[in-house]
Image (tube, rainbow, N blue to C red; front, side, top):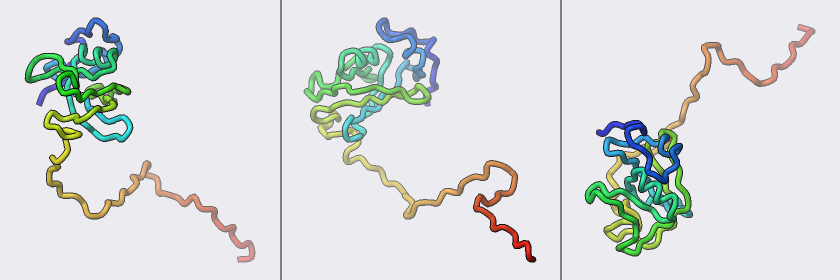
Length: 157
């Protein structure tokens, strides 16, 4: 498993906002995972990889650009297939190690021709048959007291 490295080891792309670059946590190859989601349905379409330059191109051109780990080059989704991804928004996750790219996908997102890269690829999962009831943790060591109003004591007793 690769470790995450600080942004100081990878200078920002010339056009990428230095504050954005500084907030990224990259893998050993200088890449950040980019989860691509259909903006109006929430469907997860695919996962790609971006470095600072690919992110800069994505933020400024309106089209998604990735770094191809196998070809070692930039590629813009749809240039050869026509299955373009029009950028609607990009968000950085809380740890800085993943991006959520919301797009309007034209055609198939997967190179195999399926709508998403996950279609028909479900793995067997042993799932609970009934939802588990969560128990609220007690926040202090003090005994819990009722917040219900107490009946006044009868002065005649």
